[in-house]
Amino acid sequence: MRNFLYSLGVLAVAVSCNRGPEQVFEESRSMRNVIDLLRLSTMSQSNELPTNLYQLYAQTGRGYPYAWQKQFERFGDQAGFKNSFFEKYWFFPAGTTSQIARGEVVIMTSHSFAMPDGAFGRSLAIKKDGGYLNWQLSEPLVQKMLKEEQVKPYDLPSFPAPPPKSPEQRFSGEAPDWLLAVNRFFGSLAERTGIGIRYGVLMRNLAIVLIVVVGAGAWFSWRRTRRH
Image 1 (cartoon, one colour):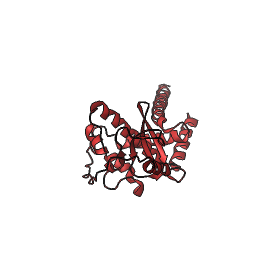
Image 2 (cartoon, helix red, strand yellow):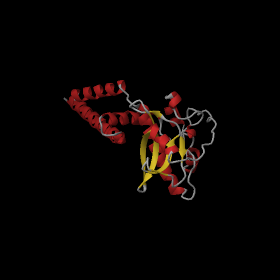
Image 3 (cartoon, helix red, strand yellow):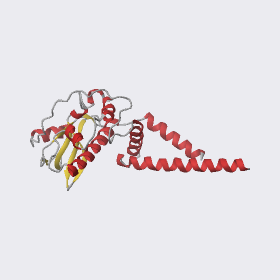
Image 4 (tube, helix red, strand yellow):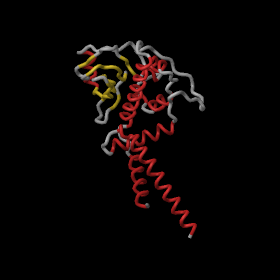
């Protein structure tokens, strides 16, 4: 038991001391969330595809994404928006294909961000074989796609800054801040172990099971000790 708890402590310290390409992880996680909303939108609004993130949130009944804005404001100039989180993504007309992206380009971040190798790139939602892929392309390839292939997104409207959020205000579908922090921790841990950030939720659930088992074992041991 002591060795197990010691290992968990060492692992937690190691991850907290070396956070890694945090924005790359957040960009991937945010794009996955947008893709999930897009799937929901196409199920309920099949005749009206959104042309920007504001329309996507409106179609799916979501309020303003204060939590996502807070996550990305930490990255300063590379947050990907100026006034509103709705400025972060470009949407493309249906049927916009690209050989560089190897599929139909659906959504892309409107600004580039730093990749782990020091270069810049962007996140894309690519439609291929009836499903959506969450890809990241280097900025030179993105520029080649935009210029040489003439892939053009919808015009991005200007959005005002959102009103301040009251402390108790929550919106449909918005995860609490503590859950976002937990998911971010295990996503980073999964990426570092080499199994991929998509297994972060699985690692989180396994950790919960281990904590429950260890806690239950400690409680029964304590009860047994008291009886003697």
